[in-house]
Amino acid sequence: MSKIKRFTPLRIAVFLFLAVWTLVFFGGFAWIILNSLKDRLQYVLDKTGLPDVWRFRNYIDAFTVLSAGGKGVPLMIWNSLWRVVGSIAISTACSFTVGYCLARYKFPGRDLLYWICIVTMMIPIYGSMAASLRLRAALGMYDTPLILLGALGIGGMLIPYSCFKNLPREYAESAFMDGASHFRVYFTIMLPQMIPIMTALGVTSFIGGWNDYMTSIVYMPSYPTLATGLYLYQVESARKMNYPILFAGIIMSIVPALALFIAFQNTFLEINIGGGLKG
Amino acid sequence: MKKTDVKITGAQTARLKKRGFLDRYDDYPKAMRHGKYAFLIAMLALPIAGFTVFYVVQNISSILLAFREVVGFDYESGREVTRWTFGQFQRVFAALKNADSNFRTSLVNTLIYFVVDTAVLLPLPFLLSYFFYKKLAGYKFFRVAIFLPTIISGVAIVTMFKNIIDADGPIVMWAGKLGVEIPALLYSDRTATPTIIFYTVWFGINSHVLLFQGAFRRIPQEIVESAQLDGVNAVQELWFILIPLLKSTLSTIVILSVSGIFGAGGPILLFTNGLNNTSTVGFWIYQEVKVYGSYNMPAAAGLLFTLINLPIVFGVRKLFSLSEDVEY
Image (cartoon, rainbow over all chains, first blue to last red; front, side, top):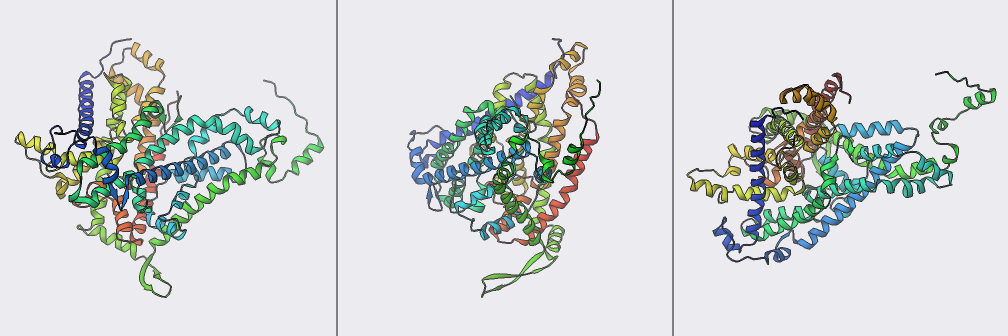
């Protein structure tokens, strides 16, 4: 390899920037972890020192102390779980089904449907929150688990579409020749080949949904998720806030997403919105 | 190659002429056509119904909301009395003219976020991805580290950040020991928005990094190596080799950014709940609808923003599709 100058000063500057960035990010969370182990009073008096007594109990107390709208942490975790899993199940089922039908079948209106999928994805629509709230209220979905039905639609079909398009035709054709129905071909031959991509998309959506605090605030106030609950606790308790226990809750809320990230790290770093999934 | 003659018999011509409407869509051999439409209807019915209700109906009703106003309340039916009007748009323009209106502040802030995002959060992630591609010392660790803010919830990061820069938090205390006085950043009109902008930039340096990295990885190594053998320097390599090869990714990212002009902003609700002049368009819509129960003016403002954004999105797309793509 030829030796060419590689912006050495810029390289050093970028390295230093990243080093400082990392230090601030991890330093910030180290500070949160340290303070999550303090006594409530010690936190008020001393925000930078080590805990006098290491109160690991804060992590257990968080389950009983933290609450929002009268709902405790266990209920919040349950709300996060059913909401995230439910909406991912519905939206994944829809996006793969639509992607499959568009990629593998010709039918009247196919091109129109494909065009609608692309155009609606491209154009951002602002200010429809009011209409969305009214619609959900009119359909009896507001502040009930039925809100999950809002995940029905044709969005997100582009990655499944291109994956199905790239599958060889022969698999399906030989199954058809053996007399398999369209349903059987889809569910037993085509869909199983999509499991790795489905997992990758599912894990990404899970983390997004787990961290989402806005949906509960806007559409499901009686069902706070963990992210929403941790925000609402800060709003509701104001001066009575128990910071160390809040910090313990914050750290606990990070764990599931972080664990998934570590387990699927390569999937995350390889995922590529522009060209679908690589590798 | 010699063209093969295909003889079409009279019977075949007659059959071709008799082809029905649906036959044009027969791509599979006959054995596979049975039950095709039953399958398609069963599979597509729910997604299309969902799209119709939660996209088409919702957006049409949003447009209608923009042209209505509440004039009273009918106690018998328990419903609001509304009428058709252009008044909502007049309200939007009046609020724009009023320098003290929350709406105008929100729009100005949103545009500031957009400009800063474009000026910093396009070149900086590109630079980082470039140095990751060039295997900067520790790049494997750094690329995981900067990705973490997308894994960790906004509530967690904002709570950490707010408490660290708080008036009695560690930063202010340490700075005080050094004789530097830092004001309560989130509690003054002058510093609150810049602080949140700093937050969005600092924790947003990973934006588009995955896209950039994917694009860098796809660059054929032979091209880069042969250019290096020809003796290009780093600037020439970046400018004449890498950037042209990355053009389609760069244009995708610019189009993505431009598409969301009026959606630019930070986690205002978590930081200040809109106080201290920090509101953005997104937050303003949330506050009007959810907190004040005012549905019509946000719908009108949203419609205007969508209409303004539309030609910009298509214009930028057109602009990028005009210049030739580099094939490799």
